[in-house]
Image (cartoon, rainbow, N blue to C red):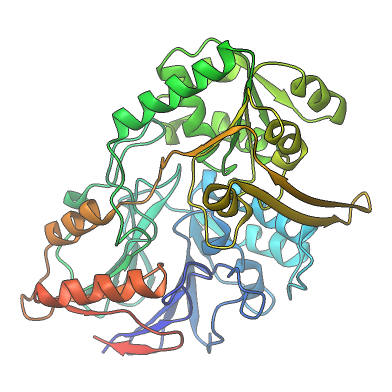
Length: 435
């Protein structure tokens, strides 16, 4: 029987990691990310003896951030693609550089990871051991994101990673038709309890509010995740022919340039190149001072206002009734972005080791602020539709494991699927299942 060990993302978002072992003892790790809880940043400890491979769904650090830890002891192939490797390297280097958390790895282990990385094209079936195969399938989440099909001892296990089945401007959506009949499904649950608003009307409202603010002499700060959400926002501006100033700062600059270097992963590279030509890249303090005096749109991480270049702009915008802050990504409970949306007050504290300065802000917003849910995850409606369209080899053995969501989302999704005759559970950390 095949053993599936859940090392992370169990009733939580963070430290995604799953270990799949064949009856002969050959092992493959699916993702190895970091968590956001200071007491449990790394995945659950497990025995990696006879580890044959690591396979990465995408570059976000909750899926990739702990990968260098594996390479302290092991030198096994890590399967990904070119764009995911480039973004993963940037994110992990940045994490190691600025984090106050004592990660048990560093740049040396990251370099060893890179040396052991192999690119796998979507749809290519690769053998990592006798009777053990890995295949990547497009996940529609961010550029380069994949779901992973494992064929182990004649069992098919499908790990969705983070998936999106709705049309976006940056990449094509996931398609259930690409997935063969299964024995087990490991599926994300991020938005299992929420329905996204219609995308077209949301984009139109977004552009309407931005245009109104900037035409009246104000600025719009869009705190956006540097990977994918910033670039999706740029493409929305291009799609609706926004003609005002556009500034991009922080990690979003680097990622945008990497996307240009990997055009085959972008749905409409022509439109992306066009909007970047209209966009001013900001990196210096004096340039930021000039931007604060200008009108237009500023796109800058971090997406939850937990740090990043957005903090250099925010106080001036919070105090300006003519300006606005529009959040475009998920705001976790307790984050400064969530606090702003819930209470109209921005609270932020940070000590910056690099220049030995500190930031301590508590500002009541005088500007407009709003949330536009341009999510790159499937919502409840599309998640259920995706799952129900997948076929299982045995109608009485439709095994589904619900991960990558908070306690309520994962357990609720599992319960709803049980009602539909799936063998569905929300695993807890460290649990092992056999199929």
